[in-house]
Amino acid sequence: MIYDITQELFSCAVYPGDPSPVRTPLASLEQGDIINLTALSLCAHNGTHLDAPAHFIKGGKTIDEVDPTAYLGVCYVTHHEGNVTATDAEAILRKAAEKDAADRILIRGSATVTEAAAHVFAKARIKLIGGESQSVGPEDAPMAVHLILLGAEILLLEGVALSHVPEGVYFLTAAPLKLGGCEGAPCRALLMDMP
Image (cartoon, rainbow, N blue to C red; front, side):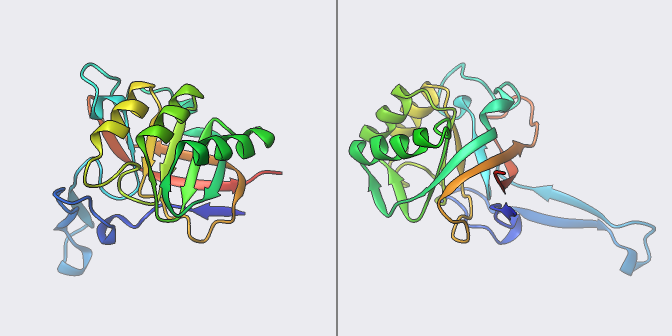
């Protein structure tokens, strides 16, 4: 089975202060034009998106420079509500490691990764962590968690839709748009059942 865990871009939640995506028709078959043509205006962090290290790290890798194996491979989906503590992070990693799926972690639910948990994930040298919120860290103070995770070159997959996905092991593909020099990009994120 394939699970689409991507928000629809034009109806997506938007991080406070970020511009909403806008679709502008440039040509329309219904208006007598020979094609349909659309212009887009959006923030690199609208909808389901990846944060690259350059989002918070001066000189950090941009989205076109990150290793594709970070957002393509086996991942573990877990459920958590509230703050993810260091103890929670250790338990998540243990469960994921038992299933050989600890490189990429997605957290379903209203979860916020704390600084202490971010240190646990960074020490474990995972490749990617993601969640349903538009920020894996606290929305009102995201910097510290982002610095820890992005400083360890852990990609952040934010704004995923996981409510319909059971806990377990999946193959993740979350290829971002190749936006040269940008600190992040929207992506189409899919989970596939493992055989």
